[in-house]
Length: 43
Image (tube, rainbow, N blue to C red; front, top):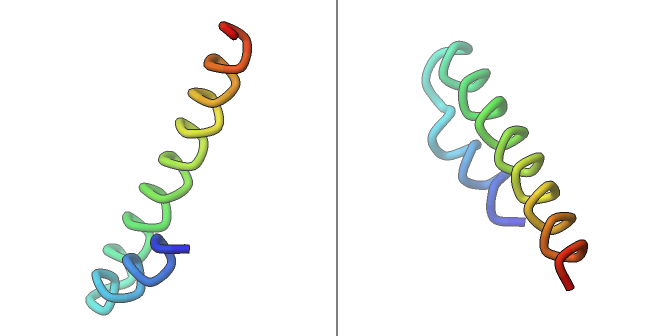
């Protein structure tokens, strides 16, 4: 919920910055999902 707002605020510059923050958010979500899966497998 926090990240779209975060991207919106920081991405008010050029298209390049918007793309960068969108990519960052996507990667963060992927990493978070992988971490959750690893933690579930360990339990």
